[in-house]
Length: 84
Image (cartoon, rainbow, N blue to C red; front, top):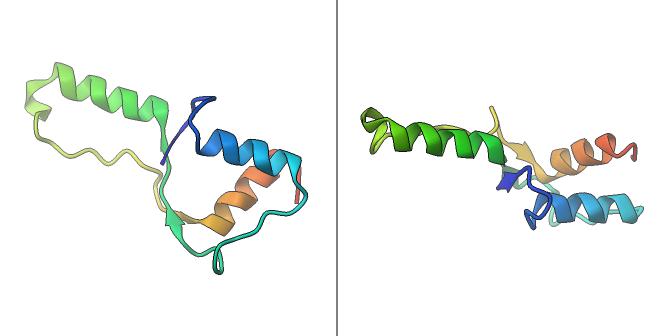
C-alpha cells in the first residue's frame, strides 16, 4: 500500500475516517499484515532505476522495515490523531 499523497485513497481515507468516528471495526482479529510504502521512497526508487542501467531488472525493497497488523496500523494512526 502506497501512502503519503493526500488523495491516495487508502491512508488518507482511513485517516479521515478515524478522525471522524469514535470506533473502528476490524475485520477478523485485525491480524492481517500490511507493509506500507511511502510515496517519496517509491519515486526515489523509480528515479534510481531509470537513470542507472546497472539497476535494470533489479529488485528494490522499499516498504516499511517490517509489516504491521491492521490493528497496529489503526493504533498508529489514531495515536497520531490524538485518539485512543
